Image (cartoon, rainbow, N blue to C red; front, side, top):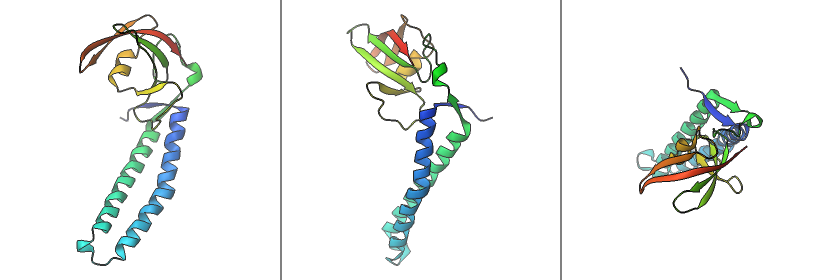
Length: 160
């Protein structure tokens, strides 16, 4: 049974755009690389051809991966997100109990290709911090296991 993948509408849009780019532009670029490599002749010692074929394999694997993600994707209704509990899509502000540093995160799906979301750092729902935060409320103390030991954070704010 296929597992449901929760994504925001922006996350789905990003994946759809990447898929379209790979299918149209990426495939064309690979086709051209292969044609150029073939013009060099002898395929048994043609590293350019081998490299182009490897690139083609990676491209097709990524296309298949995105299609698989999209086929299992369920859109999170961001308007319906609760600010009572931390969940996928939540924006949170946490405070390091020991040092007093304050961090802002938005918890996104591990399948998202987003890199930047304004003032908030994006963190994958599979990261140690996000895993520890999910399901908690404002005022909760959350312990995160890190290489340097246990780090304690207080949940200061949850927004959409």
